[in-house]
Structures are given as structure tokens and as C-alpha cells.
Image 1 (cartoon, rainbow, N blue to C red):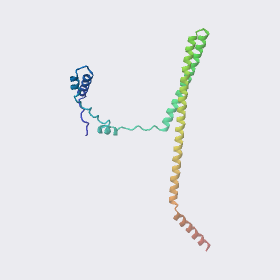
Image 2 (cartoon, rainbow, N blue to C red; image 1 turned 90 degrees about the vertical axis):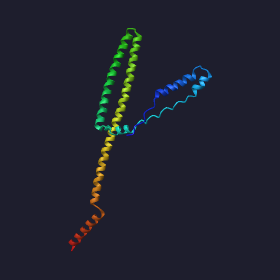
Image 3 (cartoon, rainbow, N blue to C red; image 1 turned 180 degrees about the vertical axis):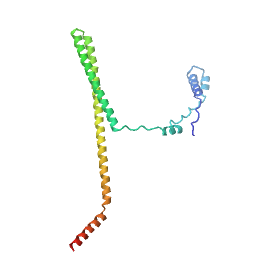
Image 4 (cartoon, one colour; image 1 turned 135 degrees about the vertical axis):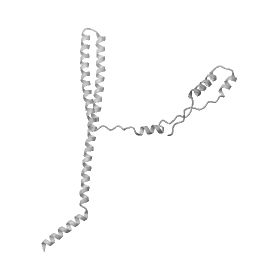
Length: 193
């Protein structure tokens, strides 16, 4: 087993770098600055690779997620569409309530309250628009998934038909057709005699 080398003590290295910085930038006599800047520090140790041999071995036995079936994906997408439709209906009702509150507030002469209700209605409108866009995206994804499923089924049937044609053609080669036609001619000639 190949293990990475133990790391060098970073605390000592960090402390020496800080000491050099402090002594270099502090106000001292030129002799002290010259002496402190001549100290050498070790370069930082190389970091181990992100995926060592052990990690690769552990990740090798990780289970891969299975792709969901087409029916499961379509069911989830349909559930999302119905949830978004319900959310849109809820937001539309909230918009109607806010418009009603704004009318009542305006009737009482409270313009600030009416404006706040109309602003809330505007935020609900933007949320309805976002829900509608998300629903359209999901519906287009559903259509693409259904089209892909139909294409796969059509390709499977074409491949099955092609395989059966190959099997028939193997049984019916040129030589067997010629032999059969020769036999038919012989029988016809025998019958003519």
C-alpha cells in the first residue's frame, strides 16, 4: 500500500514566515533587517494528490446510480406539472384577494395601503409567470422523453424485423433457390413425359 509522505510541520514553517515578515516590515536598524532577511525558509511541502491509491480503491466499489425508467420519469414530471398548476391556481386566488383588498383600501381613501396590496399582487403575478415557465419547460421535457421512448420502440421493432429477415435469407440462399427451381423443372419434365 502506497501512503503519502507525512506532512512537514506547517506550524513551524508558518511561524518562521510570519517572523520574517514582522522583522522585515518593522522599524529596526539596518543590521537587524539584513540579518532577518537572510534567513532561509523551506518551501511548502508538496500536497498529496487528491485521489490517492486508497481513495481510488474505495471509489471503485461505489455503487452507480441506476437511471430511472421512462415511466418513473414521466410520472415524476406529471406530478411536478400538477403541483405547479395547483400553485398557479393558489397564486391567482391570492392575486384576486389582493385586488379586492386594494379596492377596499382605495374606497376608504388609504392610497398607501392600496399600493402595498397592488405591489403584493405584482409579486404574485411574477410568481405565476415563473410557475408557468417552469411548467412549460417540464411539459416540453415530457414530450421529448415520450418522443425518445417512441423512437426507441420503433427502432426495436425495426431491429426485430431485420433479424427475422436475416434468418429468412439464411434459409433461402441462392443455391437453395436454384436447387428448388431445378427440382421443379425436373418434375415438370417428368410429368410431360
